[in-house]
Image 1 (spheres, rainbow, N blue to C red):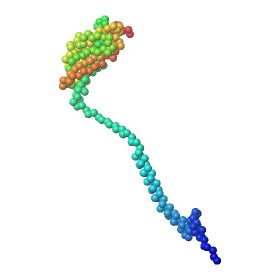
Image 2 (image 1 turned 135 degrees about the horizontal axis):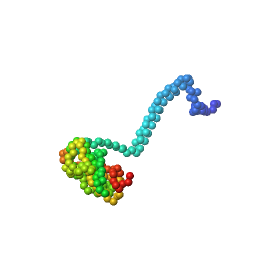
Image 3 (image 1 turned 120 degrees about the vertical axis):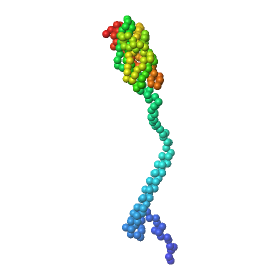
Image 4 (image 1 turned 180 degrees about the vertical axis):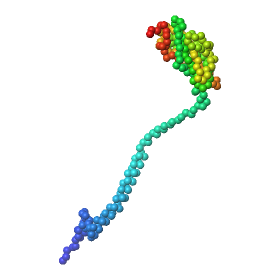
Length: 217
């Protein structure tokens, strides 16, 4: 008498080894098929990885705080043609100076003023300026030191490229020697077209080179 039939355990066994050992196909064909599947799968895998990385970069960059934008603006001022002539019309002192002691505590100080512009100017006033004080104006006239004055400086016309001498007589106040004192000239004049101008001109940076009885050399 035959006993009950038992199921074949080998038919339900899960194979964990190399499928080639349990396949009816030859090993060479099985390995070739595996290689073909790998070649097809690998490009899709790489494309998926790159797409995922790019999406992460875009999302991450989107959430980064934006940097403030700096705007640099440059500009060039247009030329003012309405005052172009005035810019070329001005007075200045030349390198010529003169001085003379005319009293115990009195000096004549003269400078040559030149019209370096391109139009005629008319002098309206000349006022000596003493930044460190120590001097007092007596009179200011047209002419050089030690010579009789030519006349008043007011109303004197100076052609372009021409020059005139202006001499001021000053009293030396409390200082025994006025050598460190500077002297300037505040000049008001009218240029071409009736334009009023005013310039502060350098006269003497100091009086160290003049001859004065109170100064020891």
